[in-house]
Amino acid sequence: MGKTTVCIVGLGYVGLPLACRCAEVGFVAKGFDLDKKKIELISSGKSPIDDKWLQAKVRRLHKKMQVSANARQALNACDVIVVCVPTPAKGSRPDLAPVRSACRAIAENIQPGQRPLIVVESTVYPGTLRHIVKPIIERNGLKAEKDFFLAHCPERIDPGNRQWTLENIPRVFAALSSEGEKRGLSFYKKIIKAKIILFRRPEEAEAVKVVENTFRDVNIAFVNELSKSFEKMGIDLSEVIKGASTKPFGFMPFYPGPGVGGHCIAQDPYYLIARAKQAGFTHRFLQLAREINNSMPLHTVSLVGRSLGRLGLRPANAKIAILGISYKPNVDDARESPALKIIGLLRKRNAKPVVFDPFFPGMSNAGSLQQAVRKADCVVLATHHSLFVKKLSPAFLKRNKVRSVVDARNVLDKQGIIEKGIIYFGIGR
Ligand code: SAJ
Image 1 (cartoon, rainbow, N blue to C red):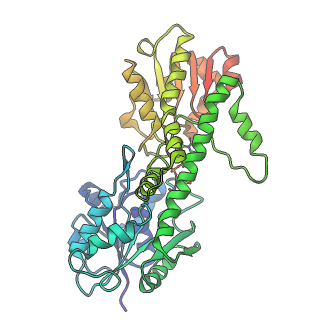
Image 2 (tube, helix red, strand yellow; image 1 turned 90 degrees about the vertical axis):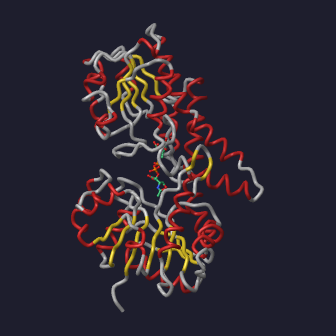
């Protein structure tokens, strides 16, 4: 038996680490991506994703990987094909176009007799493998569970997380047949050390991922809604969450903020909502949670308005500094970022915000944190990068003649800032 050949379809946050891992464990690791620039970068040993850990992996392993933008070259003669393409939500509707196109490329390029295992790792809604993926790949006359084997193993990568990685995060897995199950378990046992929880049907495995991310979305919506009532009641919600977190069981802290960004939590609930609707059920609660989280950028902008109002200013005639573009701290990922929504809303109010994010120099119009905050009428902390939390002391703000702060992540020294005579607004504090 020669070496197992694996092709990863989609070389992004999920696919690229997986391709590196396959090379690392000794598979013949191939990769397919439509983005030629990405292919060139990886072939030259550079990661298209600005992540030091991943940069080092690609530099070390790229010579052991064969990446290509040519589907035939990438997909033929593979024993295992793993689909890691994005599953965004357009507006609030699931968009499976990338999955469909990946399946078409697979259907057109696997050969009779190749009999690959095809695993979908992308986050999808229950029933996708059986009712969408299978028919597309069978379109050219191939027969599922005879000419190819289907399975689902949802990815759980958390970009930037060094504690939980591809290798040590437990995974759920399900296949459409025992042959697919056997091959899939043998594949995943070679690349991950963590537990693999086997499901009898792919539908449950597909539901696991959307449920775990929707769980986060509704809990974030819970504290975001609380932040609005606690502001009116004059109660500091961040203190209350700290207090509730002292309960050693039955409570899990979530934190109010400027909104929910990222390619998982902000989008996955729409897959569950849409699939349930197809089955005749309307998820009012999940829908409402999405609306609450989507209302937070506007809520943050209203706090900017109130803050400037106290100075006799409006967004159009004030210096407003937006600190942070990323959707979460210490990553260079701006997908669905609330900061971008806040900037858009302020521009609609004829403001010209100064923006600074060290992870996005190209999207910043200030060259440094000091240049951004200098003499700002209002500083908005939209993303709590460690650099910002460290630097934005009351003394620093005072020294730079900052007049007001909207701490959209509730991480700054509220008391100290107020004692410096600087107006302070938090989210629910
Ligand atoms: N957020 C809040 N309050 C919170 C937690 C998050 O406002 O209490 C915001 C964040 O600022 C961000 C968004 O929600 O804008 C999403 O944050 P996240 O911490 O959930 O980070 P993600 O989107 O990177 O989620 C990933 C997910 N991983 C996968 O889907 C494989 C998620 O399942 C993980 O639980 C999460 O990372 C994690 O725990 O870090």
